Length: 101
Image (cartoon, rainbow, N blue to C red):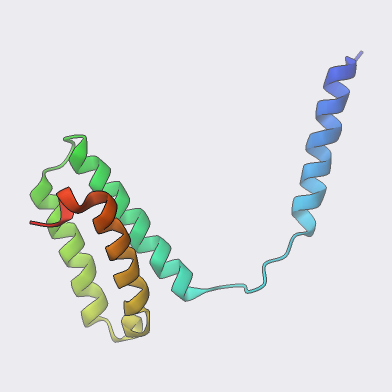
């Protein structure tokens, strides 16, 4: 027999699944947000790896330079350059000790 507390938990989880299944995104794909998030996530990961001593500061700097160069060279990404620059500026505030030589 299911306890009263377990029944409440099952009902709550079921309600959350129903609520989540009916939620719809306004846009199926937002490339500006994607590139901002991609660059921020990659940069933050590299920053923490360097701070933790798992990779060298030089590797972290080279990674970020490579990402920035990729945006410059890839004509398909030119329109998202401003999003990447915003992400980089945000990362410099938190990881300036890693990314700024």
